[in-house]
Each structure stands twice: as structure tokens, then as C-alpha cells.
Amino acid sequence: MYSFKYKEDFPDELERVFDEWANPLFLNEFFEENETDIKISIEDAIEKVKKEADFLRNKLIEFAESEPNRLNELFKNLNNNVYTSEDLTHQKARNRWLRLYAIKIDNEHYVITGGAIKLDNQHLMQDRPHTNDELIKINKARDYLKDQGVYDADSFQEIFF
Image 1: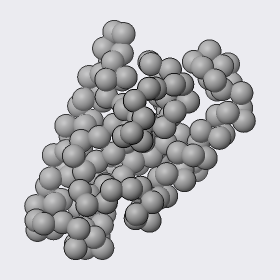
Image 2 (image 1 turned 180 degrees about the vertical axis):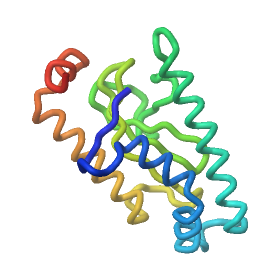
Image 3 (image 1 turned 30 degrees about the vertical axis):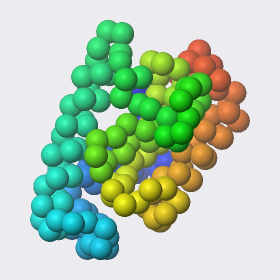
């Protein structure tokens, strides 16, 4: 598993999203901005995200450290109406409200492009600015990989390592 790092002095995207999901100030601000989309108190929503993030992080570690890794069990097509999975496709790992977004290089290699809190009544990523930003990032990441000549795990390794 790999992760995009968009700015030199910023963490990579995997670290960034888990840091945000653990940060009560970030979460409080997020839920205040989206208060009409939740049916529980902001305090309960913050606790829910923290628990979901811990669960998702533990699953991610467990599946990544399996031999062979089982990341393909965690990541699914971003579009729920697509049932086949090709290489360099948009993928998501989810746990209720939380989403990790990635590009699938092959069944064992994924590149994290970002993540977001996607509340229950937000059906499409385009519906909210924060999820739309993640959609833009995953599309740019895929285009970047294609422009670099990445089409499988070997070409990814050749370009980046």
C-alpha cells in the first residue's frame, strides 16, 4: 500500500485523513458545518468517527500485513454500480461514515489518494464540497499515474522506486 503526498511539508494522504479523524477540533468544525446532515449530537458524532477510524485503521493494517495481503477485500469500486474491477480504477474502503479513496494498481497494490467523512444522506461525491474535492483528487491521481506510464505493479515500481 502506498499513499500520495501532495505537498512536501504535509503528511501523506493516509496519515492526513487519520489525523483529521482523530482531531476533535477538526471534527467539531466539520459537524458544525454539516449539523443538518446528522441525527445525533455533535459530541456523539465525534465519538462515532473516532471509533470508526480506529476500526478502519486496524482493518487496513490487518489486511495489509496479511501474507499475501488482503487489501482487495477492503477496497471496492468507487462506483457502487460497477461490479468488475480493473487495474488503475477508483476504489474506496469504507466504514459507515468514513471513506478512504485509492487507485488500484492491481489486487495487492493500492495508492491512497485521500479520504473523507461521507454522511448517510450524501449520496454522490459531487453533492458536497469536501467529497467533491476527493473526487477531483482521485481523478487527478489516476491521470498522473497514467501520464507516468503506470498500468500495473511492475510499471509502478519502475517509475517510483
